[in-house]
Image (cartoon, rainbow, N blue to C red):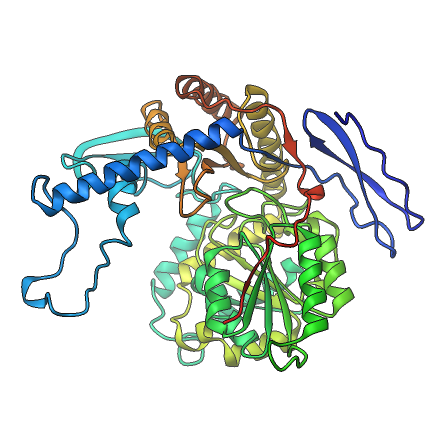
Length: 545
């Protein structure tokens, strides 16, 4: 068994990065011919699923499938009451709207644990919130309010990274004043009567914050990706997409009509192989050179808690003359000494990223998204973006929430509140992750990522964990198939600067208690480093649409 590996020093100069393999630390060296790629330790862990646990998880899905077919049989013969959406009798000869077989998972597995999602709250979603209790008398097909409100539930599910989701303070006051002055809605697009001075001020402020020439804002974060990628690439272009990219990136890539090829998550060997193949072989059949090659990645991956290896992506982008589209939805505000995202986190130049995208829904606790980059890019987007041309303009109270919170982060409000929140988020993240790992849970992702996935694996434990945590006044998000691989169900904690140490300690004690109850402490300390994952060239997907 290997206890340590020493890699030869490159003549170009290297920096050691500490990772974990099995239960012993290994020094992994990374270098580029133009100098150091990493200026700081980059530590991520992805512990492999224990074999017995994987087998038991597959067996549990098999048992649920058998019982699902049995219940479908009973519903068909009216032995069991059927709540499934069905066609009206007079429309039986029409092409069906509802595909019963395709919804098998929804009605027979998801419905069993549906009470773990869609829970209504009745307060500001800050560090704590008040939750409206619901109950079901038909196995989660329908719900009714009980009239009880669960008070002061510790919120470990919202993307409130910097704690700006509050109904008091400077942001709430500013949004209220703007509502009185301008009203709530704009009722027009930016190109017609919906372009206000506050929108232009926000775009100038966002460009300054990002360190780019120009920026453009949109009213919906999802549409910022899905409606803008088709404006950048089209037929004859190639998109190289990380296999764990968000659905908005995937949809935007598909809508563009470009050829899509998927590389293994955060695996630079896989990405480089696709880049080489694209340049050598060109387009299918004609073998003409691609018009454009666009790399799609995220700053922080929202289900894995991993951080993109941006220095290496930029090095490959420059080497093979590709374009880079960086989605910083979860990383802007949450990473970097000044909250300026993954680019600042690695100490890189924003000009090396061709398209900088992000949302205002997480760290800024608002809505909408932005695109930042060179002025000619933004000028082009203003006339070609579907989201800019056809979508209604961002609401003014939302604009003011973003402006006020961004000025706070930048210190332009004359205080250090923003910087202290960034520092507190970083401290809370490291503390929470370390404590969970010490307890014996399998935790995914980067040590600095405020997205903390804790592996549950079995579908039955998915619902049980969410219910048991709520009984103890802790609100968590649980995630399963199809949002994750079928054997990698998990709880996803989102850490906030608004969390106090007492809140985190209380939550950690409850997690440990429920972990013992449900036997969730699976860790065998066999951690697979993301920076040295073995690459199998047969595992990447290729989709030419």
